[in-house]
Image 1 (cartoon, rainbow, N blue to C red):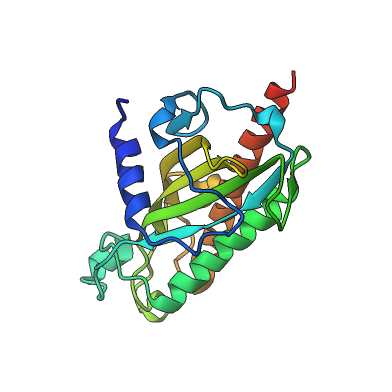
Image 2 (image 1 turned 90 degrees about the horizontal axis):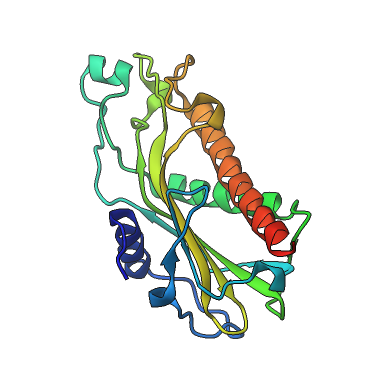
Length: 232
Protein backbone atom coordinates (compact mmCIF):
# COMPACT_ATOMS: atom_id res chain seq x y z
CA UNK A 1 0.00 0.00 0.00
CA UNK A 2 1.48 3.33 -1.05
CA UNK A 3 1.62 5.89 1.75
CA UNK A 4 2.41 9.58 1.77
CA UNK A 5 5.34 11.09 3.66
CA UNK A 6 3.18 12.24 6.60
CA UNK A 7 1.53 8.85 6.98
CA UNK A 8 4.92 7.13 7.03
CA UNK A 9 6.20 9.65 9.58
CA UNK A 10 3.16 9.07 11.79
CA UNK A 11 3.55 5.30 11.67
CA UNK A 12 7.30 5.48 12.38
CA UNK A 13 6.76 7.77 15.36
CA UNK A 14 3.83 5.72 16.61
CA UNK A 15 5.62 2.38 16.71
CA UNK A 16 8.76 3.99 18.10
CA UNK A 17 7.08 5.39 21.22
CA UNK A 18 6.56 3.18 24.28
CA UNK A 19 2.85 2.62 24.93
CA UNK A 20 0.92 2.42 28.14
CA UNK A 21 0.08 -0.98 29.59
CA UNK A 22 -2.32 -2.82 27.32
CA UNK A 23 -5.88 -3.16 28.61
CA UNK A 24 -6.44 -6.86 29.35
CA UNK A 25 -9.80 -6.96 27.57
CA UNK A 26 -8.45 -5.41 24.36
CA UNK A 27 -7.22 -7.81 21.66
CA UNK A 28 -4.03 -7.29 19.67
CA UNK A 29 -4.35 -4.29 17.36
CA UNK A 30 -4.22 -5.25 13.66
CA UNK A 31 -5.33 -3.94 10.28
CA UNK A 32 -2.50 -1.48 9.59
CA UNK A 33 -1.81 -2.87 6.11
CA UNK A 34 -5.48 -2.98 5.17
CA UNK A 35 -6.06 0.74 5.53
CA UNK A 36 -6.69 2.69 2.34
CA UNK A 37 -6.35 6.40 1.65
CA UNK A 38 -9.53 8.37 2.18
CA UNK A 39 -10.73 11.96 2.24
CA UNK A 40 -11.61 14.00 5.27
CA UNK A 41 -10.99 17.00 7.45
CA UNK A 42 -7.47 15.92 8.38
CA UNK A 43 -4.31 16.14 6.26
CA UNK A 44 -4.18 12.33 6.25
CA UNK A 45 -7.18 9.99 6.48
CA UNK A 46 -6.90 6.21 6.25
CA UNK A 47 -9.89 3.90 6.57
CA UNK A 48 -10.56 0.18 6.69
CA UNK A 49 -12.59 -1.01 3.66
CA UNK A 50 -15.12 -2.72 5.96
CA UNK A 51 -15.42 0.12 8.49
CA UNK A 52 -19.03 0.78 9.54
CA UNK A 53 -19.56 3.51 12.13
CA UNK A 54 -23.22 2.57 12.55
CA UNK A 55 -22.03 -0.44 14.62
CA UNK A 56 -20.71 1.77 17.42
CA UNK A 57 -22.41 3.83 20.09
CA UNK A 58 -19.66 4.06 22.74
CA UNK A 59 -16.15 5.52 22.91
CA UNK A 60 -13.35 4.33 25.15
CA UNK A 61 -10.32 6.64 25.42
CA UNK A 62 -7.35 4.31 25.42
CA UNK A 63 -3.56 4.26 25.48
CA UNK A 64 -2.75 7.94 24.78
CA UNK A 65 0.83 8.71 23.78
CA UNK A 66 2.87 11.91 24.00
CA UNK A 67 6.33 12.36 22.52
CA UNK A 68 8.44 15.50 22.89
CA UNK A 69 11.29 16.09 20.47
CA UNK A 70 14.63 15.51 22.16
CA UNK A 71 17.15 18.32 22.45
CA UNK A 72 16.41 21.98 21.83
CA UNK A 73 17.86 25.30 22.95
CA UNK A 74 18.21 26.12 26.63
CA UNK A 75 18.96 29.84 26.21
CA UNK A 76 17.04 32.64 24.53
CA UNK A 77 19.79 33.99 22.29
CA UNK A 78 20.08 37.63 21.26
CA UNK A 79 17.75 40.39 22.34
CA UNK A 80 16.45 40.87 18.79
CA UNK A 81 15.80 37.16 18.35
CA UNK A 82 13.97 37.03 21.68
CA UNK A 83 11.68 39.94 20.78
CA UNK A 84 10.76 38.30 17.48
CA UNK A 85 10.44 34.82 18.90
CA UNK A 86 12.87 33.53 16.26
CA UNK A 87 14.98 31.26 18.46
CA UNK A 88 14.20 27.67 19.25
CA UNK A 89 12.80 25.13 19.36
CA UNK A 90 13.43 25.06 23.09
CA UNK A 91 13.69 22.27 25.63
CA UNK A 92 10.40 21.42 27.35
CA UNK A 93 10.90 20.86 31.07
CA UNK A 94 9.54 17.68 32.68
CA UNK A 95 6.98 19.60 34.74
CA UNK A 96 5.76 21.42 31.61
CA UNK A 97 5.48 18.13 29.73
CA UNK A 98 3.30 16.78 32.53
CA UNK A 99 1.06 19.84 32.50
CA UNK A 100 0.75 19.72 28.70
CA UNK A 101 -0.35 16.06 28.82
CA UNK A 102 -2.92 16.80 31.53
CA UNK A 103 -4.45 19.71 29.62
CA UNK A 104 -4.78 17.65 26.43
CA UNK A 105 -6.23 14.61 28.21
CA UNK A 106 -8.70 16.75 30.17
CA UNK A 107 -9.87 18.45 26.97
CA UNK A 108 -10.41 15.12 25.20
CA UNK A 109 -12.49 13.68 28.03
CA UNK A 110 -14.61 16.79 28.48
CA UNK A 111 -15.27 17.48 24.81
CA UNK A 112 -15.96 13.91 23.68
CA UNK A 113 -18.33 13.47 26.64
CA UNK A 114 -20.45 16.18 25.02
CA UNK A 115 -21.09 14.09 21.90
CA UNK A 116 -24.75 13.53 21.06
CA UNK A 117 -23.94 10.43 18.99
CA UNK A 118 -21.60 8.52 21.33
CA UNK A 119 -21.32 7.77 25.02
CA UNK A 120 -17.86 7.91 26.59
CA UNK A 121 -17.45 4.79 28.76
CA UNK A 122 -14.97 3.58 31.37
CA UNK A 123 -15.09 -0.09 30.39
CA UNK A 124 -14.54 -1.85 27.09
CA UNK A 125 -17.56 -3.72 25.75
CA UNK A 126 -19.67 -4.44 22.65
CA UNK A 127 -20.38 -1.63 20.15
CA UNK A 128 -17.39 0.27 21.55
CA UNK A 129 -14.73 2.13 19.59
CA UNK A 130 -11.32 2.50 21.17
CA UNK A 131 -10.02 6.01 20.55
CA UNK A 132 -6.23 5.89 20.66
CA UNK A 133 -4.71 9.35 20.45
CA UNK A 134 -1.15 10.55 20.16
CA UNK A 135 0.55 13.93 20.13
CA UNK A 136 3.96 13.31 18.58
CA UNK A 137 7.17 15.20 17.83
CA UNK A 138 6.07 18.10 20.06
CA UNK A 139 8.31 21.17 19.88
CA UNK A 140 8.21 24.42 21.86
CA UNK A 141 8.77 27.97 20.60
CA UNK A 142 8.58 29.39 24.12
CA UNK A 143 11.95 30.67 25.42
CA UNK A 144 13.04 29.58 28.91
CA UNK A 145 11.94 31.93 31.70
CA UNK A 146 9.96 33.98 29.20
CA UNK A 147 8.00 35.71 31.97
CA UNK A 148 11.12 37.02 33.63
CA UNK A 149 12.92 38.33 30.54
CA UNK A 150 13.19 42.10 30.15
CA UNK A 151 12.61 41.92 26.41
CA UNK A 152 9.00 41.19 25.46
CA UNK A 153 8.45 38.18 23.22
CA UNK A 154 5.56 37.95 20.73
CA UNK A 155 4.76 34.52 19.30
CA UNK A 156 2.43 33.25 16.59
CA UNK A 157 2.42 29.77 18.14
CA UNK A 158 3.78 28.22 21.31
CA UNK A 159 4.92 25.18 19.35
CA UNK A 160 4.02 22.48 16.87
CA UNK A 161 2.97 18.82 17.00
CA UNK A 162 1.74 15.89 14.93
CA UNK A 163 -1.71 14.72 16.00
CA UNK A 164 -2.80 11.11 15.42
CA UNK A 165 -6.09 9.40 16.20
CA UNK A 166 -6.86 5.74 15.62
CA UNK A 167 -10.33 4.23 15.91
CA UNK A 168 -10.12 0.56 16.83
CA UNK A 169 -12.81 -2.10 17.13
CA UNK A 170 -12.80 -3.17 20.78
CA UNK A 171 -13.75 -6.80 20.06
CA UNK A 172 -11.51 -7.59 17.09
CA UNK A 173 -8.69 -5.09 17.55
CA UNK A 174 -8.93 -4.08 13.87
CA UNK A 175 -8.13 -0.45 13.12
CA UNK A 176 -11.22 1.13 11.55
CA UNK A 177 -9.62 4.48 10.74
CA UNK A 178 -6.52 6.56 11.33
CA UNK A 179 -6.25 10.32 10.88
CA UNK A 180 -3.28 12.60 11.35
CA UNK A 181 -1.95 16.07 10.72
CA UNK A 182 0.87 18.41 11.68
CA UNK A 183 -0.48 21.48 13.49
CA UNK A 184 0.80 24.65 15.06
CA UNK A 185 -0.05 24.86 18.74
CA UNK A 186 -2.08 28.06 18.77
CA UNK A 187 -5.70 29.09 19.37
CA UNK A 188 -7.99 28.71 16.32
CA UNK A 189 -8.85 32.42 16.51
CA UNK A 190 -5.22 33.36 15.83
CA UNK A 191 -4.22 30.99 13.07
CA UNK A 192 -0.81 31.95 11.61
CA UNK A 193 -0.92 35.39 13.24
CA UNK A 194 1.50 36.78 15.80
CA UNK A 195 -0.14 37.49 19.16
CA UNK A 196 -0.71 41.16 19.97
CA UNK A 197 0.11 40.37 23.61
CA UNK A 198 3.60 39.61 24.93
CA UNK A 199 4.12 35.98 25.85
CA UNK A 200 4.19 34.88 29.49
CA UNK A 201 3.39 31.69 31.38
CA UNK A 202 -0.33 32.51 31.62
CA UNK A 203 -0.72 33.22 27.88
CA UNK A 204 1.23 30.07 26.96
CA UNK A 205 -0.98 27.74 28.99
CA UNK A 206 -4.14 29.49 27.87
CA UNK A 207 -3.06 28.99 24.24
CA UNK A 208 -2.36 25.30 24.90
CA UNK A 209 -5.76 24.87 26.56
CA UNK A 210 -7.60 26.55 23.67
CA UNK A 211 -5.64 24.51 21.13
CA UNK A 212 -6.32 21.23 22.93
CA UNK A 213 -10.01 22.06 23.11
CA UNK A 214 -10.06 22.77 19.36
CA UNK A 215 -8.29 19.47 18.62
CA UNK A 216 -10.89 17.61 20.68
CA UNK A 217 -13.79 19.55 19.14
CA UNK A 218 -12.58 18.69 15.64
CA UNK A 219 -12.42 14.99 16.49
CA UNK A 220 -15.89 15.04 18.05
CA UNK A 221 -17.39 16.75 15.00
CA UNK A 222 -15.79 14.24 12.64
CA UNK A 223 -16.92 11.28 14.75
CA UNK A 224 -20.48 12.59 14.98
CA UNK A 225 -20.53 13.32 11.25
CA UNK A 226 -19.33 9.81 10.38
CA UNK A 227 -21.86 8.22 12.70
CA UNK A 228 -24.70 10.30 11.30
CA UNK A 229 -23.68 9.52 7.71
CA UNK A 230 -23.45 5.78 8.43
CA UNK A 231 -26.95 5.78 9.91
CA UNK A 232 -28.62 7.11 6.76
